[in-house]
Image (cartoon, rainbow, N blue to C red; front, side, top):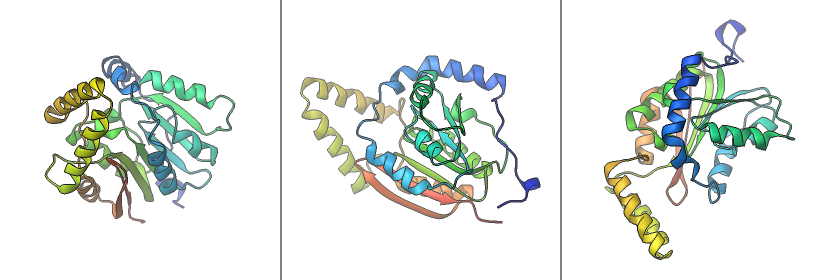
Length: 246
C-alpha cells in the first residue's frame, strides 16, 4: 500500500479536448471496429481475467474496453474500473450491459487510447483485451510506457491481443496458414476476406499486430519486470509485466 501523498486519483471526467477528439476518432474508425464480434474470444477474455486478479478497491484501467467483457467482471469483483474505448457505440453497449449488475465502481468514457493522459501512480492494474493492435507500433509503445507511469509501484499490466509478426518466424507462418485455411472453408466470402485481410496485413491498414517477442521487448523498454508471455489461442497472445515495487 502506497502512502496517500504518493498516489493520485483518477479524474471524474477526461479533459474536454480529449472528449472531442474521441468523438472524431469514433466517427472515422469505429464502424470497422464494431463489426468485430467478441464471440470466439472467450478464451482470451478468460486468460485476461485469470491474470488480472484485482483486490476489492483496486483501481483498474481497461484500455479498449469494448462492450465490457473484461470491465464488468472486474467491477463485479469490487475493483474500481475506468473503462475506456474510442467507440461511443461500444461505450453505449457497455452501459446497457451494466444495467442491473452490481458495478458501483465502474466509470466509462469514450477516449482515444493514444491520447490518454492520467495521473501518475493512480492505478493498481492496467488491462487491455484485443484493442491495441489497432494502434501503430510507436503508439503501442507510447501506451505501454504511459501505463507504466499510471501504475503504482507493484502494479501490473496485462495485455491480450493479436500477436504475430511479419511472417519471419515459424510461429507467424503457422498462424497465417491457420487463418487462411479457416477462411477458405467459408467459400467465396471467405476468399474475399482472405484478399482483403492480405491487403491490410501487407500495408498495415487498420490492424498493426506485432509478435509476442516484440511485446515483451516493449514492456522491458518501458521498465516492466517479471514479464511473462504465452500464446492463448490461434493468433492471440498474453503478455504481463509488473512495475517494480518501491
